[in-house]
Every structure is written in C-alpha cells, then in structure tokens.
Length: 536
Image (tube, rainbow, N blue to C red; front, side, top):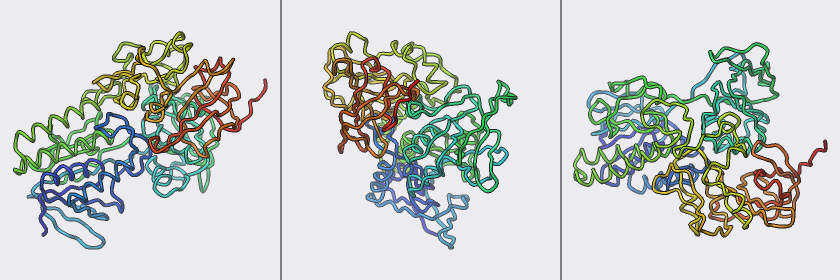
C-alpha cells in the first residue's frame, strides 16, 4: 500500500487547484483521474471566462487548464491518468484501477473532485446516432477537431447550451434553434445574445417531441408546453437538423462520497445529491473533502476556489501552515468565491428565483430573457449606454451588459479609465463621462460576454462606423462587403469592412470595424460576410 499525505480524485479545475494549494505548502500529493487527459472540462472550454483578474477573467478555459497542470507538476504533484478510483474504505484507503492492475493507496486526507455528469432526457428517437450531449459536442469540436454535424438543434438554454451553441457555429455548423421548456433563457444574456445576433432563434416553453430518422437523425419535431409542462396540441414544428444536442443540466458525481460514508443531501439548487460540507469543503467524514461540481454545480472559476479552500484547510490541519496563515488565505479565497456567487445568476446557497430588476434598479430586459437579444427601447436605462448627445461628439463605447454578471475586465483593460465597475464586480459597468475613449478596442476584445461595441456616428456623411468582436473564420478582409445585422440577426443593410485588428492581446478575438448607414449605428451588431440584401 502506497501512502500520500493528500489523495485527490479528479484532475479537473477543483482537483488541480486543491493539489496546487496543498503541494505549495509542502504536502506530498497524488491526483488520480480516470480520463486520459487532465483538466476535466477546462480543456474543452475555448470561451473566455468571466470574473476578475484573480479569477483569471478573459482567459480561455483550456489555457487555464494548461497553466494549472504545469503548476501542479512543477510543485511535484504526481498526476496519474487512466486511473479509476473504484473504492474508498475506512482510514482513507482507496483502490485504484490503473490499466489492468488494481493498486492500493492510503492518504492522510482525500479530496473528492469528481465533477458532474450530463443529464439526459428521453423522447421518441433519442437513441438515434446524432443525439449527443453538449459535452460530447465540445469533445468532438475542441479536443478532436471534428464537426458534430451540419444543422443542430440545441435543447437547453443554460450557459452550457448557449456557449456550446456558439462554439458549434464557430465550428461551421448551423444552429437551427435553441429550445427550452422553461419560460426564460437560463444562461447569461450576453451568451444568448452572441448567437441571437447570428440569427439563431430561441423557442422558450418548448420541448422536443421526437427525433426523426431510421439510422441517424434527419429531423426533429418540437412542441410548445403549457404551464403544467404539457404539450400544446397543434403547436408542433419540424426542424431540418442532423444533430440534436442536449444541454439539460448536470448532476454531481457523488457516488464515491457516498461510498466513503459521507452524509449526502438532495439539494436541487446544487444540482442533486451532494455531500454535506462545512465552509472548508470537509464532509461529515473527517479528512475527506469535496470540491467543485461534486459539491454543487457552479462555474469552473468557483470550482478552482473551492479546491484552493480545501487544500489550504488540509495544509493547516496537518501543520504545514499556521492558523494565522490559514485564516488569511481562507478569507482571501472565500471573499473571491463570494464575488463569483453574487449577481443575477448568483449561487449563494439560497433558492433561485427569477429576478425582475438589476441590483441598481433597472428592469431586466424581457426580450433578452425570452428572445436572447436586447430591444433597443430597453437599452436607454442602462448606465453603459451613451446618450445621443455623447454619441454626437464622436466615437463611444457602448456597454450592452445588463445582468449583474460577476465580471470586470472592461474596467481593468481600459487605458483611459472610461469604464467603471467598482470594487463589487457584479455592478453594471458605467461609462465615465469625463474620460475620452481612444478607440483602442481593448474593452471589446476582452469582454467575455462580447457585449461591448464601439460606435462612431460621425465617421462620414450619412455613415457610421461600428466595431464588433469577431471570432469566426475566415476573417473578412478590409474592403469586403457583407450585411450588417441587428441584435436579432435580422439584416439591416449592406456593410463594408473598414478594418480588422487582431494581435496577441486579443487571444483570437478580432476587432472588426464596419461602415454602415448612419441610421443603423445603434442597431448593427453583427457582420454577415458576402450575403446580399434581398429586395422587397
């Protein structure tokens, strides 16, 4: 039997973070993961993260994963892949299947960081090839470079559904629709807005009735549901798709915690059955901790902090840091975690309710919640939207961030101090009237929600210049023509690309500036290359 001071089960964001924290204090740590690659979901996540600088905001998930792994290995953490933990016994002994061999380990402390599994729903045809989970779609696209299909129906409008929907479009798929049985979009409005302006419709209060096909998916029928979740006769719609992608939630993988004798509780707000933990992540079994999605479904940034908190507590428990040091680190990590749990979509341990207003008192956009885009008539109440007088002076940044999401890179990157979020990162961003926007575009390319645009209504007689974030390939070239689309994806007018800027700081996000007729300056939010405007 091999002994380690800390055994961590799961090499995802929580597990690697716990390993780093413990190893940095001098503990001998091993991490087991049943997969052949470490990082959990991080290496599939090509989008930029929200949060503040300490949360690694505006970094892409796979880059964070690479950094965590390098840091853990650099600290001497042993990461064993293809290692399935199949049992936890008294005195923190575990059995691990590695290749075809069963090995036995014992730890002074164990951190269970096994993550979550995707939920599924059943419907006629759900076993056909072409019905896949959102995680599988991400694996195909972002790990193996394969396109899952041509036309996709996304089932589920939570963050996973809308983020993967965007990535499917980046991979060259057409997303025919996003449906959800709920009456409101479950994910961040900014994520939904990214695909809405590309023309993806949202059908809320809809579910899937049937997948069509004999040996593969060749269509889907969706149907509206009433308030009792029952199908509304006559509301069926057929969609021509070859992939049905399910993003209907996650469930904590708490089986090992139960096997270890940890007390579990059914907590719908946390995604299901989770181990009961104290504020340090310690379960009801002494020296067995839980961190990340296994303790409650949250974003990866929160999982990393939970791992830090558990690793710090273990280091103190075993005398590697003083109580004073422990309390200082714990307070830092806890404060950072609570920042992420604030805001409209906050995970503060309470029950979720659908808010009606922002923290500042503005009514939440109903079109954003039900259609995925902001209606221009709702915009004027938000502090990041410059008024007509300011726009008449020249180039301005337009901050279409309206939901108290914990995030502040726009404030950090602006060299002119034009944008203020303040110390509380869930505050809505505010344009500072006394500052002058230089047009550098750093806020546009850094915003994880792609919710910032530059608008210059004085660009030329009868024409305005609108700068947008752009992450599709091939990149349009200056001088090329296409169509300017509004926030719903509707074509407004012909547009011409003025410039396309991309550099190391943009991390793959280009700043595309297009010339549009002046009257569309505050509506044009997407450039569709090549398409011609249809008359009539």
